[in-house]
Image 1 (tube, rainbow, N blue to C red):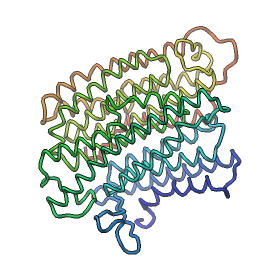
Image 2: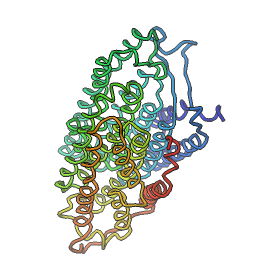
Image 3: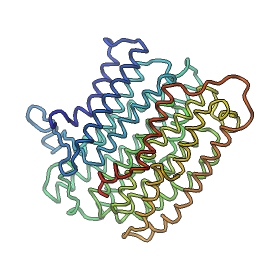
Image 4: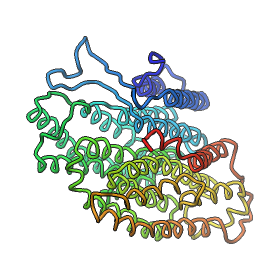
Amino acid sequence: MSIILSIPFLVFLPLIISALIISPIFTSNEIVVRRFAKGVCAFHFLYTILMLGFFNAQNPYISEIHFMGMDWIQSLGIKFIFKADSVSMILCALTSFVFFVAIIASKFNIRTNHKFYYSMQFLLMSAILGIFTAGDMFLFFLFWELEMIPAYFLIAEKWSEPANIEFYNDNKKSAIKFILFTFFGSMVMLLGILLLHYYNMSSGGTLSASFSDIFANGIPLKIQILISTCLLIGFGVKLPIIPLHSWLPDAHTNAATPVSMVLAGILLKTGGYGIFRFNYQLMPDAFKVIVPVLAILALINIIYTAFVAYAQIDIKRIIAYSSISNMGLVLLGLCAINKIGLSASIFHMVSHGLVTCGLFMIAGIIYLRYKDRNINTLSGIAANMPRLYGFAVLIILASIGVPLFAPFVSEILTIIGAMNSDFSFVIKCTALLSLPLLILSSCYMLKFLHNGFFGGEINEKINDISVHEFIVLASILGGLVLFGLFPNVILEMIGI
């Protein structure tokens, strides 16, 4: 099976498909392009599940690519090496699933320039998978930077209707804002990587950028804290951590529905993964020092953005701010520095990825039918679209942490992990103060449900969800129920 199950194949298949779709030799027929993209995504998802099924935590997938018998940049100890442990494989499976449902959701949401759109989606997929499986710091950074290119175009372009200059300018502004924030974070993060590479070599004598060869014990603690802070700024843009968050609501508001599903469902998780891989694993001593500050920032994420979400009237902005709030829980789980907290953090990445995909899909369906996302002007959706209403009720209940759904498990584990933390009293206080999140999330989500779905009847006939929309929502809901009833599917892989 080692010959068949290949990390480079998993990572580079979407890149090859992206190049094939955008090439002149590939057809421009919308139906052919869309069906080909769905077929490839289905195959990729099944391949990822196969790799997950044969995964052995004691023997993770490792693959190194040599160039003419040499390492990538041999003089600097930089290797083109991939390594997938249990956390990487879980997030790769989530990535493959999110892109699969986003491609299915593209049927009615994407109306123009199909070749370019699907090419950018596959390029972004390859970059994110590379981030999750990179075994070298500079290879990680390469994929981190590569992700900006397709993300920019996916946010900037108007995919659904004929060009509208005013709306297109809003899209471009949001995309440029995303690039500026990400580029600033990347430059600071690169400084941290360079410092870590240099001090690892000077203190330990190891000229290598591979994660397995980084030993921060010999690096002075003050230098570790400086490096850790630089890395946190880069990862904090993507997570995002307040005040590095303001790009996200604008990007979600203007991006097409499938793009929003990818941004919130998986792109934000690259920030949490980076903190885990670099700060949590490579420099635990420095991480323990800055944990109290991170815990306070996590609390601000959780509480402040929940209040901001309640004040929004645009469905997409409500979901965007709720995502920032939930990413605070991911950060809080990591701050606990124990197995329960780590498991809760990874589990919440998965559960939130599923929830936010479902919520953005619902928002997209509403906009397609009503051409409106203002919850104060929408009305009668429950009466006109009972199937959509049924899915909305269940997914919204999942998002607020009702038992039997995956977010309930991750939220409870986060609080338990933080309360059992041995490293800081601040963590325990933050956990107690975070409990109102359950109430606050209920408030803004139930406000969205009540104001958006109920009210006066609409005379015109509104079609309920189509077959492909049903498949997307049912798949997402199925995942939320599956992991809510059987959380050990994920927790045992992580170590609980």
